[in-house]
Length: 426
Image (cartoon, rainbow, N blue to C red; front, side, top):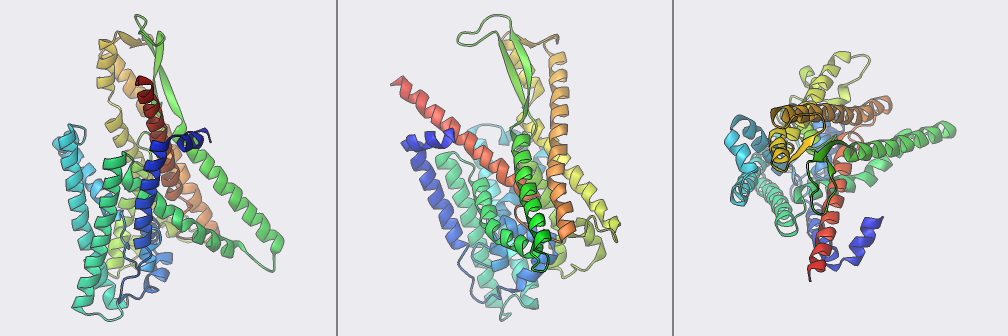
């Protein structure tokens, strides 16, 4: 609450947020413009049955199910980011450029936007051709295919450029904010869907209890997600001499989820990829695709498909550790402590300190990744009980919503503090 009071008092930050909201509003307006020649109702039933398409629809703010100008929204850019990050594992030079000088980071950003445009073009053409033959297009002709391909590709490029503009000019994570806006837009519709599912006119008392339980469950899940994102482990650091303006003791913070929303987005995107390909090829009925369909997990009659959940867990944990290694480098931290004449209690400077920090970081991230898995899977179990599919405020969407919101709060707070410090200099 205090943060919002400070924002209201700070004219510079408030003006920037107004501009950011205006850019996000442009994206949402484009998301409401229908594409000509499209049968908008074609996708809705398919999305309910295919969790891969349901997840993609949530990330686009229901633009995919409505087949609007922004049917793909920011998703091609996110896919491109995943590919660039994975290439960084194979080619260390790319990883170095991501953390290098400003010119190198700009080059990586441009390459990501370009790759996102290519992915958007391929996805748009694949949707228009594969689904167009099956009823998506009112009239399947080459010019309608070309038109929809161009429109959807343009929409994806506009979304990525708006995100880049927010990042470059206002220093907020533009793509994450677009994603957050898309998910929040889907909340009201999905709440009505849940109410229709649990409502039973013949059993009012039971429906009321069920509704209250789901409401409390969702609130607790949001609260637990905030707790996981905010929790950090502090490693005490002692200085050999008093540093001007600070005490003899400080600490190294190790967050439970240093990668915030990135691991869950990457893991979910990879998991849904086979289902999307199956939908494109009209092979959604193939049994092996059920391993990647969360709607098929935890079904007592087909428990074998729950094996796909193990893959999901492995992906979340793997990406959590990968992003922790990018954000926190024990060797660099150890060298910096030694240079400043600081040390971790009872640990020798140098290699012993870096090994100790790596061990504590792995322990912390391990707990955080398990917490992310718990947040992602408990709603899937609840969805299986009540047969609720494709709901935006369940599963990974909660992690994304909370993670981006907390990231935005931290960025705004840092800007306010920075503005205040600058004011004190004059």
